[in-house]
Amino acid sequence: MPANQEPAPHSDPASGEASRTDRMVSGLRARLRHAVGARVWRFRLFGLLAVQAGVAASLAWFVGAQFLDNPTPVLAPTTAVGIVAASMGTRLRRTIELLVGVVLGLAVGDALMPLFGIGAWQTGLVVVLAIIVAVLLKGGGSLLTQAGGTAVLIATLEPPVRELSVPRFVDAAVGGLVGLAVGLLLVPIHPQRTVQRLAEPVLDPTIAALHNLATALRRRDLDGAEQSLTGLRILGSRMTALDEGLGAAQEVVRLAPLRWR
Image (cartoon, rainbow, N blue to C red; front, side):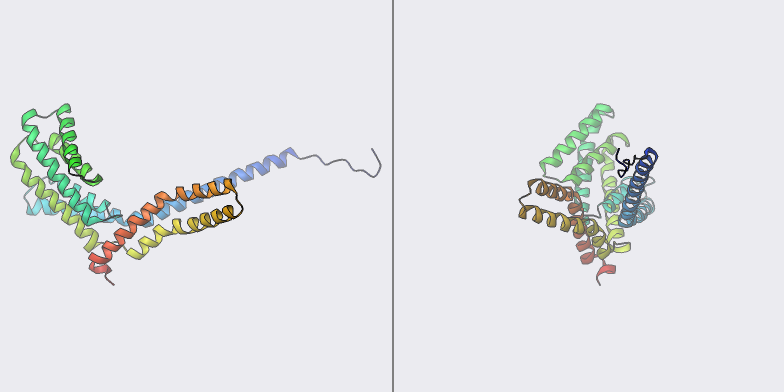
């Protein structure tokens, strides 16, 4: 070896292992921060729904028990919670769908259960027929779900007696009206904050993806363009949530006196 040539430095295995450990710890911290941030965002966005659902269920049960002389008004709080859960959308339309679904479930259940009795296959048959009728009426997802769920209640919780149809429907109507009143009158969402929180995870990623797509198209970079389009497709569910939130905000501004300003 020449005198002026220094030996090549050897990499230290311990330092390489330490760097890998640091990268792993850093990645875990980043994922933990992302998970915590996502949970906080969801709580800020949907936390009010828990309060609305609890208030609506309590009021619906109280009204059904005190004013309708029903010791177990099951359908009233169930329907009220269903209406509150539809806040990221159009509550008024959802209320109508739920009530129509209740009517279908009651009609099919009360018509068939006295003939076939209560049992496993009878419950399945009632649910199938109730949903088929809802499909023939071109009902949406809420109508189909409520029709099938009400048919299950009729087939399992109550004896096959025809005279209970009207009280059940009244319970469901009271629950729907209470849920609508809680969501639009007593504890309405804040439309500006709701739209802002739904738009936060959409706008910046969309702008970045469109910028990258434009750059890839200018450079005729097929891989870059495909990656940008994939990023835009991933945002589809967030765009759907934002669209539903805009509908909910418009409905609240139009119908909730507390938000008219």
